[in-house]
Image (cartoon, rainbow, N blue to C red; front, top):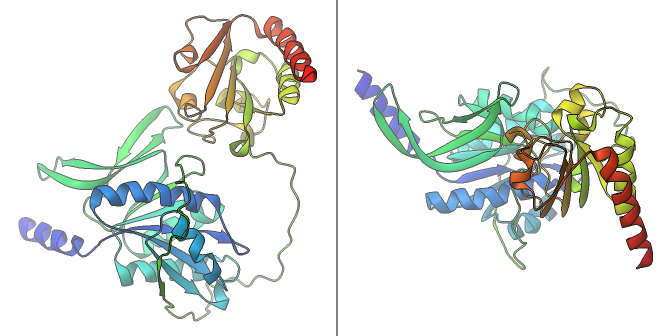
Length: 355
């Protein structure tokens, strides 16, 4: 019976093909995470010898199709309905779950945004599959199933931080489809746009019948926030526990101001209450890829390095010459930041003023 059951499951899994990306859009503009996921989907699809499909959900959004094609979508499934004009949990869940049930994708990727974190778990529950959240690595590989003593090929291996970032877990979903994962913005890289690329467009509407699960939106109030998105910064001046105090971050702010950069930090700084969580770099913060990354008073724990190692240039300043951060740094200064930063800032200020 057990053998028969596994055979039946295996046969049903073979119906699922393709890598799908939820192409999040807000107010008629595709979110950057959608393009990043399409880039990763291209890599996964190549390994599986399949194609990439973007799922575009909204109202009057057909004009966004070409942009998705340029960033890697071979097909775009458009679910366009007045009920989808503004994001609401139930109609969007119904839309994406219906697409999955109809077209049977092997893999579904969702951005770990506010919308994606609300949508992904509900969709996975509705289609009876698993979901691995906040993945930092996605790759196709073999899964060793201890229970059956089988090696299952071509599985989506989903790597994510666990236990507060203190360990790394690689998770597979070998007996259910689709294999679903959410990925934080900035983790994956979008491809260079392919000019004049076109995608096959499939219009799909499962029908929407409002019920008591449909939240009625009475008013949308948009506010302007002065919150800095460190993922967009070209120069980051990042501080860790070694900065010593909240007051000492003034030294980092002075350097950032001279360079036209932004101050960011490690997890320890957030836990100490020195900077808000929006400034945190690392596995439990944001993944960044600036042109220049200053790591000041940061030891270089793997959880932090995972969030900034793709920076073009890394400059480390630490009084501990054996700090692991120097292993990933392009340039290093061993010294007390209180003695290093003021003259460095002044020198850079004078150099830039002379140009």
